[in-house]
Image (cartoon, rainbow, N blue to C red; front, side):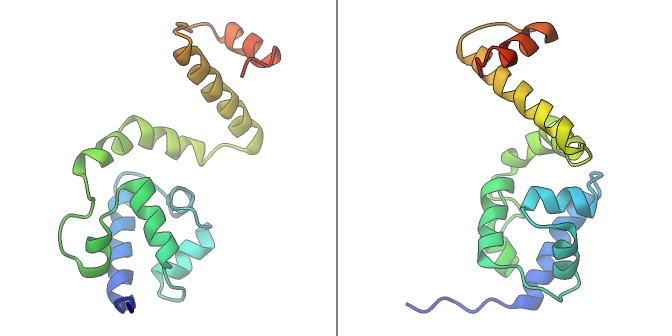
Length: 143
């Protein structure tokens, strides 16, 4: 079965609408690019129509952001397949991702360690409010 041809100019319009949606929420091109798995220069080329959004990118948008693929290709339906899916992204998760994009590599590593430690503590039913205990767990290799 032959795949349906996608109107690249239409998809460009849709990805621009999607970017503008996140830009109004305070995301820069750089932070939005990281979220969707491309570099900032690559996103810039996509938004200018100099580079195409691949089907792989579209699937990534669907899986990571809940973007409705039908909306992306045809404009039909809502921007997000499940409007509730995007709500957490707009609040706490969105703030975390936005701040994460501004961190250098050392701070990103620390955040990764902290997040893994918190997951272990949650799994084991340990209430953690003490940063020293988190650092201790990391040093002991418990994460």
